Image (cartoon, rainbow, N blue to C red):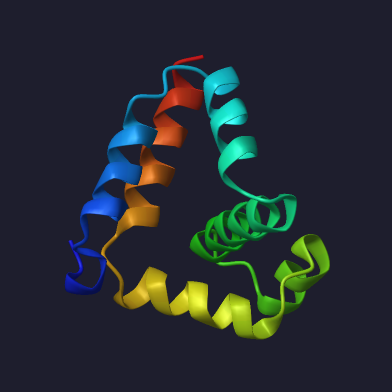
Length: 100
């Protein structure tokens, strides 16, 4: 874990998320935890990361997601120099889709 994130409260949040067992539980938890703009920002970043991982160009990503080029750039930096968190999630989501 990133040293900046080593904190009891953040670890508690992660543990809380890991207890969720269904889409309905996730929906209820995140609606309680986050404001609508926060949820939209998180989901937008995830969509931007997905599109970048599919080698989409910035202009297409801006048009589809409404994200700023600054946001796209930050997400791209995470994809290229981060901890591979997006990659793990995308691989697991792809695997789930294949098994459905």
